[in-house]
Image (tube, rainbow, N blue to C red; front, top):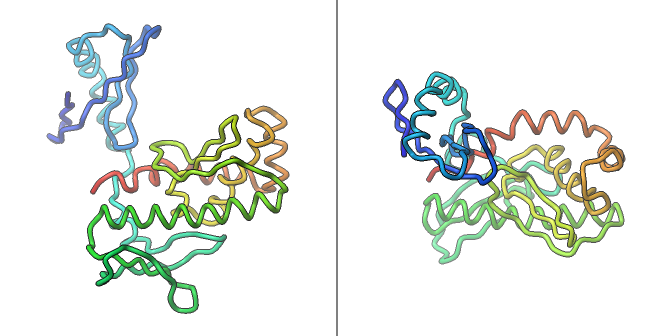
Length: 237
């Protein structure tokens, strides 16, 4: 199913059927698709009719939606990645090596991304590998400093969340954390580490996080202001 804008652009419609809900709701997904959350037995005709009635609202929301970026486009405009509390300039090179890898140049100030083929999949795969290495080290650093232990850490391609912590003390982080400024990357890590002690978002959790990050409120607001755009990086190839 598609929605055609007044300018003639075709926008995919993602249907999420939910048992127990009574109302139809529309929102935009992380790839700027229209997400229709509807009661389980709603017909496609009924969904299209509802979308048609909301077309003016959808036009406004689509006009406000952040741009989708490929990772190569993002790094061309902002050639930097973050690790160990530092910002590294990024240089992408084609290499004769059979395997993609990265190294550091200019005394460690420049991160060199070396790819056998300069294609989007290779770039995304290597940056995600860099993110796993970088975030593993940064989480270990903060956990040791705070005398905390965790069972496992995974770095994934979440579409809307920066991180999570399970009841089994397993942490999961979004690879896009390496696109954030160091202070915001640390804020997300500290947020998830705080869940090792407080698994909910109650008063004790926020009090603990305030101890971990004295600028927590400002960092949270700043993260909210950039999340919608950054979550759309790597969504096109």
